[in-house]
Length: 132
Image (tube, rainbow, N blue to C red):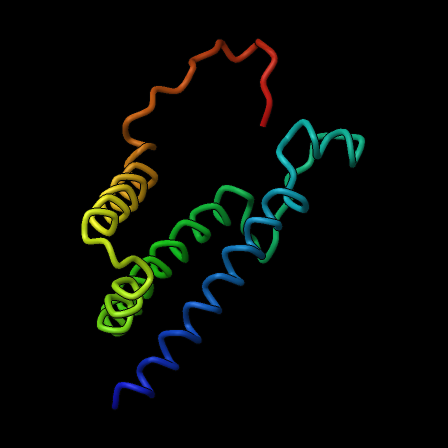
């Protein structure tokens, strides 16, 4: 497959992943309500399923699609690296400024990906008031 065709395939798959991530996120948040919220809406304890999957299974699918999206994003960046580099050099003529910006973007990007493994959640006994 030539590069333009590969680009359109990658970009299309990225778009579909973004739409799936958004759609599944809204499904989990607004349709497949957690236990207490579902009980308020339906007047009793119910299990909410879509295609036989509960909100936790959909959360797993959401995560898998996000990982696929990140892989496609990496490919997208690799395919467009020369253009990204050329545009970046043009936007910021000062070499020191470019290095500072790149360093900050790398630090923030790594921090956003790694933070779930760094944070410590607050542990509460299950009888206490919780918020989903």
